[in-house]
Image (cartoon, rainbow, N blue to C red; front, side):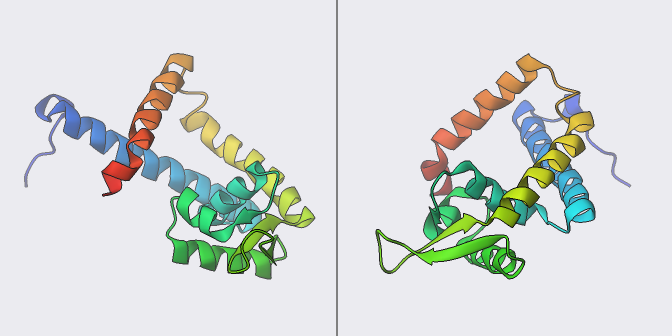
Length: 155
């Protein structure tokens, strides 16, 4: 049976990449389990709600597709499910007759606030209580660098 490579045996770039993937998967799974258990709300639904809660105006569906980590078809299915639960509304866009805009309902805002508390509690022991301010700043720097190259990286 082949042995597992240690950190010292891996190139630094490979170890860093593996670490990002592992951390993202592990933290997302942790949050997903907590949100589903407490609110019957998968993390993908929460992500869409997060974008909607962050915007003072209704959000064009196309913007949600470009902003989230989900594909446009996934966003459409999530919005359908959220609408079926009475958590979002779709309205024709006042700016573009071919487009619809999505916004949280009052029930959606209430559930989002509760779910956001659950998300923060689920992350605390594995993230915010574990990492110090310098760690958070370093992660923010990495995120900004990668995000700044998003178009080129996806090309």
